[in-house]
Length: 119
View 1 (cartoon, rainbow, N blue to C red):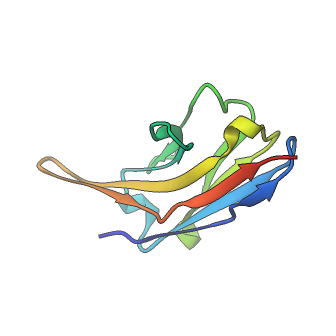
View 2 (view 1 turned 120 degrees about the vertical axis):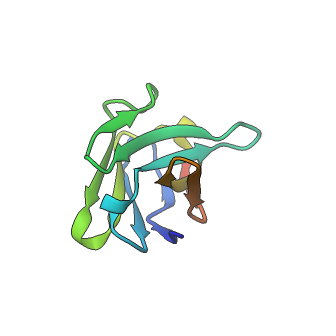
């Protein structure tokens, strides 16, 4: 079991920046993959970025060069720094953690935080 607590969402103008935080209830080294997903109204939830327990990162093409996923392991926290925000980045952002192995795999989700990019 992993609890995920998110913070940092809000309203920002185009071109602005936000940093989202996701605090996990146990060591990130015990979590296989952590990541951020987002969902716009009427659309499917989509992957934004991931980071593995070994520190490898991956990004959706739409955010490459603008967003950065990182971690602060002593705080069991993963961040998503979002720069040069566009209106199409608007949506509910969810933190995700994948744990376990073999026949016992689990997905854990944060509560979601709203990000709105508008002038």
